[in-house]
Length: 277
Ligand SMILES: [Zn+2]
Image (tube, rainbow, N blue to C red; front, top):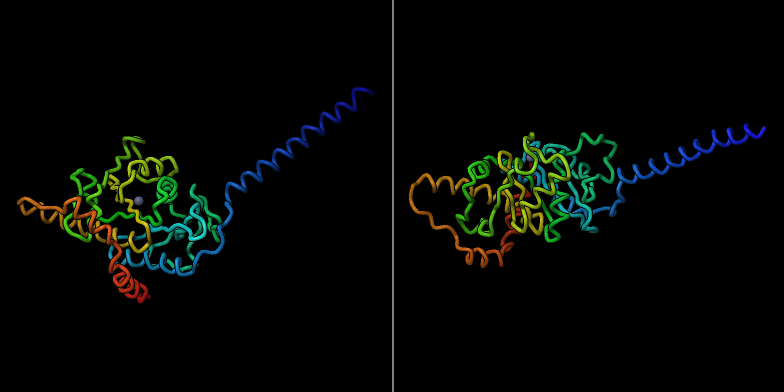
């Protein structure tokens, strides 16, 4: 008699514990997959984010692999970026909200594989740099030689003055050995953000670059002029003559006024990019 009851209890109790443990695990796992939304973002911000991608596509600087993001206007611990889609095809409904671990709040019913693999570039830079409001990841061809040769990028002209603050090169082999070059996880994202440090951009050897700025308009402008500066610098270096780059003090004076005139340039870029079907 005495032997049956304990056995029954013994059979029931572990099941109840397992059930509770499962419930806790499932709830934790759900919480991990779905961070809380900061609420609807400013529609103008979404409109400008869509435009930013299209402008950069228009300049040949983003394709189906590059991406642009912006911090959420309601919460600095959230950022907005398109689902995995070629930049010129993105519309407002394709924008997804992420937390800084790059977990989507809502995938709009899409599988995780429909998101950009390299979104960790954005989340980890936002974590490390509270001053950064917008980030671009590009595979711009003109930047590749400078990442591969380690010839430093130097500021050729006033539009690209920010280069005077230093553009480091991220060498993924030093952190992860042999890889497929992609920033596939948060650890690699952190490594890249560390290499960026306090600089405006970082080149990625054999891959591309990550560019930062205190606004969407400026990150688009910096991406366009960083790429153009690389072309101009390579041209000048082929002339086999001494090059006078912008001085750091000149760059400081220009940067103090950066943004002056950008609004009108932005409107022109945006109108042209958004007029395309
Ligand atoms: Zn990439």
